[in-house]
Length: 163
Image (spheres, rainbow, N blue to C red):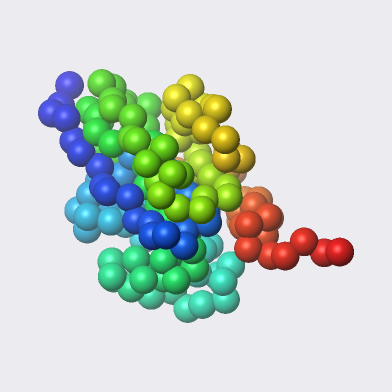
């Protein structure tokens, strides 16, 4: 296989209420050293659209955006062997210390971006004490992506309940 590749540090602060966890950064994400770096990935368009903002390019603009909107980002896998960007090729992985973010921020919900993130999270953190949902992957490789599912999950965190 290949050498062990390390992922990114989490992006969060003491105001983060939602934690979005992917599986592991793609080749394009690793090239720019930030989450969802493939322009064809639907994540940024979906999230900026949800909040009614114009998509901004650049790592710092995206970091500022997620922190301002109380969203934390990380991946379930902190290091692994991987061929290209294929989750199916992931081997010899180390699980990220998700509990450290949940303990440091008032996380109310965890959204797992895709099946691999959900599987590994469930196996390792199923009893974490924070509600979590498997979301349709925003990857361009996923033909079953549904923006409405993401928006409904975001509503559960960011929209006040109707009385």
